[in-house]
Image 1 (cartoon, rainbow, N blue to C red):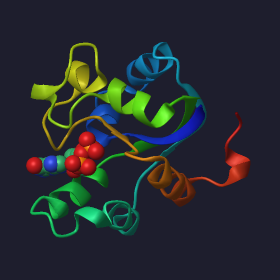
Image 2 (cartoon, rainbow, N blue to C red):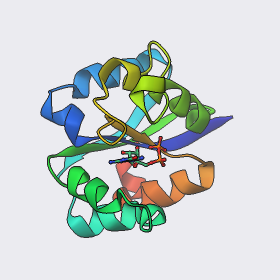
Image 3 (cartoon, rainbow, N blue to C red):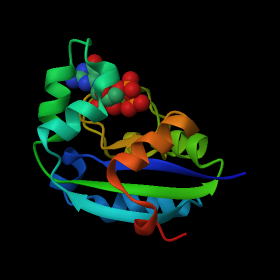
Image 4 (cartoon, rainbow, N blue to C red):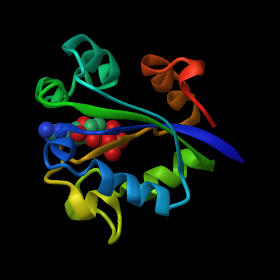
Amino acid sequence: MTERTFSIIKPDATRRNLTGKVNAVIEDAGLRIVAQRRIKMTEAQAKKFYEVHAERPFYGELVEFMTSAPVVVQVLEGENAVARYREVMGATNPAQAADGTIRKLYAESVGENSVHGSDSIENAKIEIAQFFTDADIVG
Ligand code: GDP
């Protein structure tokens, strides 16, 4: 089934000029980038985006990291895009990520792990709506 998922290329990756390299892995995996924008996340945006983690000990650090440099927010489209992108990203902790995944290739640590991808179709819809309107997405 053709689906859409939400992706973020995180500050550790934009800082190292890896946007193109990350996008190459995404496209080589058969996912199409149907919307993309480079932004500096505000503290309010980052807090809202990660509010499910508000009680976790790393929440403050995570919000600080996500607002520390530009990010690239994206909508990806393809067959089973949500699960496919999770596969392409690799495990949260790069030490546990499989070979060839974005996090194995580029992530620096469990916190500074280069990319975000939605974990369900429902969350993908919510996350996409936080950053894009329908008119921004050209499939
Ligand atoms: P994901 O779905 O693979 O991104 O992982 P989670 O939903 O569990 O965590 C969300 C994000 O929080 C991760 O991608 C990391 O950037 C950050 N994070 C998770 N665990 C830790 C941690 O132990 N320490 C820090 N600093 N950040 C973490």
